[in-house]
Length: 326
Image 1 (cartoon, one colour):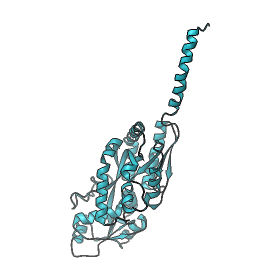
Image 2: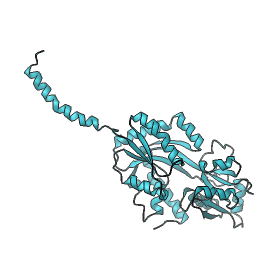
Image 3: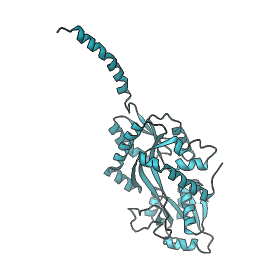
Image 4: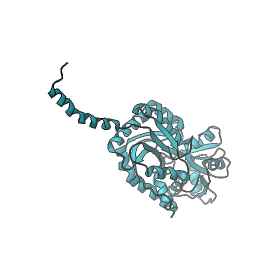
């Protein structure tokens, strides 16, 4: 076959275009493994939710997706590390309320800000809490407990796993909105906080479903009400706190996948679509039912629009508790 001079020149002119095209294709996202940081230890609620997403996300993006636990100081280590990471879409995190609380509670050590250092990818779930008493408690309903809290009794107590924890702030808001009185008793762990309620040494506690389900099923704890906007599917006869005597009360913790601020918008759009589609599957709905959490699927732009309101809400609750630290 005879190649003309014109054909040679045409081919030669195309070479620069081909050389430019190769790097562009190689840089398409994702081109290497994605890491999802877990701001808690293994087997916690936030850990198991993260790990549910790694396999289907890996298959959809055709790249390894791995979870890495970074527990410690209530999530401070993980949030700080992710905030300082290159915003390229290869480091994500499943965040909860501590993203807003830690800067308020640890002003001297928390060097990040939820609104300026993170950008939402997608919300996938919401975690409500349950208010429980000992199974043989004299308070058989939330109405019974509220009556005691609003009366002359001064021995009503509630426990949490530490000052500033979601359980603590839920109790602060419950006490305030109910118009009653109860003394907060902080513990060092969720286990001891719930065990002492079961043993009758503490009146009540407000904890996540996974933390109390076992003791409810074994007959050691009695579930009086749920902190969220809806009843738990597993306990349809148990009212919400708002239904049972504290109108307007609602406390729940969302779970949002987030990325460092500055992550490219096309990457955020891609990840948002993938996470929300996985969260809408029957498999995830079944998973949530077993974990006593609720699917709450929201794309990254909608979550971003809510950040200012969330920041104001949690600052108000921390101010109400009077626990801001320098």
